[in-house]
Length: 340
Image (cartoon, rainbow, N blue to C red):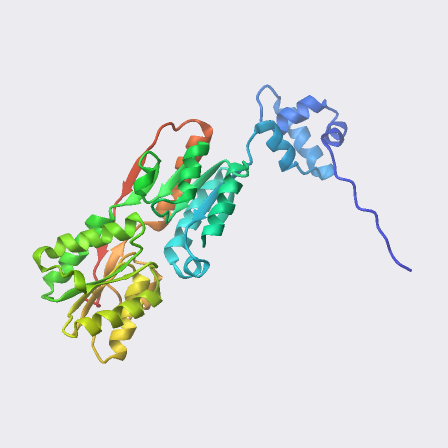
């Protein structure tokens, strides 16, 4: 014999009102956290909600408030890179902590192709989120343009050149890259190359500019290996390229810790010691830095704090307490270890 059980009907506001012995209007005011409701009525509604198992309809609430209760974190990176980059994870953790405290839902969106751009633009235009935090945006990005056209509350982690009037949270990549390159030069290195990544965005461009400024007349453009991604593979392939061009290389600045880790593996497999033959420095102070042997000298950036500030900025725009564009640059720190 088959046991067929009817689905339990969903509790309604009327069920809550009947259970609490109050009007629907009073129940609605309590559920929407409106003023002019007594503490006794609030307690009665909360207890009635528990007893009847009432769950608020997000769709119905959205129709009334014209808000979704969600904020998007848009990451312009391949999915493999998202999983491989500890900074992205820490930014996400910081963002989620602030949104969760504000009872907002985080929606993570990865942009991995031109087709993804089209899909995300349509999603944003559909009003499914109240705001957006944008990570690793490229120059000329259609998502950036759509955010401006829609007037969507948004904050960029980084500062794309075509989002000059948008709010952003960033670090001074140029100054940090210049500082750590000068530290590398001060160890006595005379033939220094760079593994440059992400040159289609402000962070990669600024790190190359800082490296160039630190070397001055000693900068050799032939000793720059370029790759679109801040990845371990970029470090492997770029290091091989530099060694082929300049076997006498004695110093390397890698645009990220993951890139530096790939470079160090190539150097050690080729019989070169780090830092004896070649000094290596990176950028991020991520988990990659401590996986390296010897541990990596690098720039520490406050990834989690970047996410926290970005979320606070977007929530302020949604609430109307923050108007106009705002820019905040957070400090970095050189962490000197055994690789240089």
